[in-house]
View 1 (cartoon, rainbow, N blue to C red):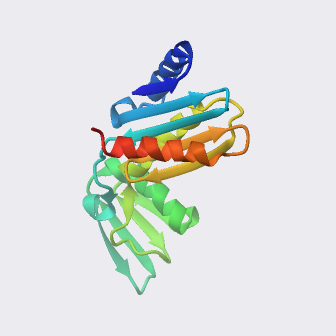
View 2 (view 1 turned 180 degrees about the vertical axis):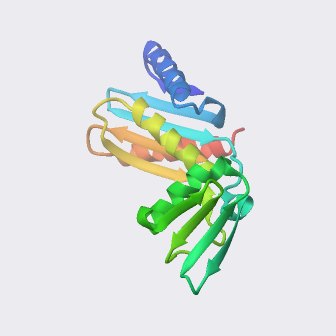
Length: 186
């Protein structure tokens, strides 16, 4: 973690804010590196976060069996591990609609008139969950009023360049420079 700022006291305060917010949103151990560049005189605030690798997505096939009944126009899902049942229900409600999903027993789910394939359906995606939490943290960290934002995300790196004025190319270049350093530490 590094905070680059002309004012050492301001840098120390931002480092404290950063640590507290990462802890609050429970991503401290999932963050590999954070670089902040802040210059309120310009005004610009750049934050670049590199996350640790996550576990692979959990597919429906990993914890359930399913079959289609063409005659009844339904899909039947038999749950083998109910740990993922809440996430499955949420996903099915999103893609099929809540009114089409029925749960006749704790370990069974029925979909009326299924419109989406269950094959290789991602139920839990740890990478997307982590990314969502990191964005939550970033938007808590950036200074109040800095609502002009250039966003960059690739692989395990998320970068925000923020200002309350017109975005300048030199700030975006500085952000890309920090990303390059983070990707290839020497």
